[in-house]
Length: 370
Image: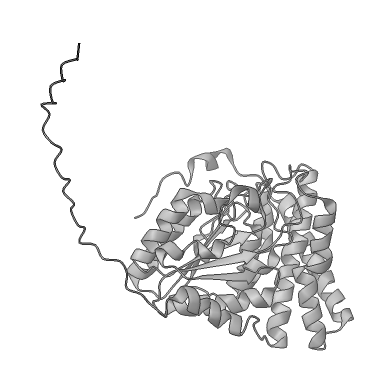
């Protein structure tokens, strides 16, 4: 016996979806988009052409950072520096080259926790930096900041920040202040390849581009985020491209060549100061020591590190350039001797300085003046 046909569904037919068109319009095609033009301008002349005096100054700053950090490592081993300590050995050309192009008294700098070199490149007294590392009252943050949280508003240096990537959004605020006050200043916001994967970095890029802030995003790509290589953690390993979605131009730079770094600064700073909005610089560099003093660096081979030291060292490259300008080996030895003496003086100053009074725990907690 045939089955009765099932009754048709009484459900009404689905309504055709209503498509609401967004009034937003895509950015117009721009053949002169700076993502291309800035890189092309840099490629046309990759190395800054310094005078003999300029190159000597760059060399001396890098060597000061190298010798200072070596001494800091020794003091850490002696127990005179506590907590974490992240050394800048190998990366000296980055801060030296970039900050040599800043305008003193006008521009601002903010960075992460590997900050000693940036302060020295800014011309800050090694005595007060070493005193801060050792937790002394004479330190630039009165002994309360330590290695990772140095700070000096007098020098427009806003840290030293221990939270990965946090300094970038604060750097956006500094750049906003420059624009709001119309003071002609720009902000350098340094961060590493590990911090480059933090969400707040991209939120800041979006706002900086939207508001055309005078800001330079500086990725110090030293190839390892603690013990994790760039290739293991990043889908896009060319960090200078990461601003594309926000229409931020990027430049890839050899961060082991101080003259290439300085030339990139010339190109980027000119663009930003002219009102062109933010720029993203990727400085490819390499740290010789571990991520911090407690890092045995077993994630890379000794041969890899030695190869960088022998073939890519920023100080040795600068020495070769100085030789072309007729600076003798004897002159370079005298410079090194004077810098070693200066660093030893800073260490002695720090060791002989008193520790902060207990009452310092209650200072610098609240903002006293607005």
